[in-house]
Length: 343
Image 1 (spheres, rainbow, N blue to C red):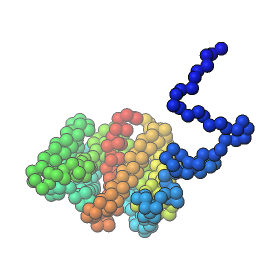
Image 2: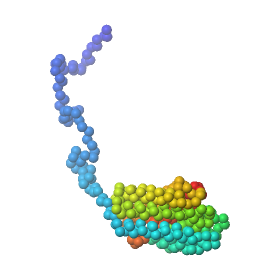
Image 3: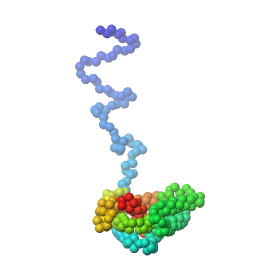
């Protein structure tokens, strides 16, 4: 047995409670505030009805308004789809006229597309030292065309060298003026697109000089053109689900355009001679279609971002044609890489 302990001196004894019956309810907490009986429910911070009056969070839900999605301009969207089809058909048909010692017609078509693309990109991005960047882009385009026609053997590395020199020259030209230096990093994306896009288009001239290159251009550009057109036509009638409220593009059009472009390229592969097969053509068409559609979509997001930032926007024609131009410009080097890897 444990020894009993004596009560300490000066401490009041415990009050005697009845042996039966529930204990008396507590009248209040330790700080004197009354407590409510029953189980407590957790209060959610986002519930405005349970906030104390004068809470700084009151009225936030009322201030935040849902942004309505921008309306799709059906006629403009269909016009952009038609422009993509015409541009793709022009490049494919011009590539068929190219041959040994007879590359001038295709080069003239490429120069025209370069001039239109350079104008659209420069007016859309408006980089610092605009005339300097535009001049560097034009010079890089001319040099790239000349190198693509005259380089022996036909390969991509000379165009990469022209691209690097053009980028360095454009960035250095923007650093000359003090007023342009602070905006160089912000406009670097536009500068890269202006110079790189001008150099990327002559990749198709290099493709026409290697075996099976013209057929690769046909498969890839047809897939890219069909994907761009189908995506835009779908957006004109069913831009759903919206990728962003401010951008009139839908996921159904983007995915559907890439799928239809891949199917058309596989169909072309079944009619082309060896080493083309439907599987190889489908792989090439899938990559070209995805690159073109995503480039077109990225241009739309960039344009909306500039509008929301309060930057000046170009005319409506330049604003809408730069998407297909960018898509075909990026699909050209993708076609060259696919020609080397797949065939």
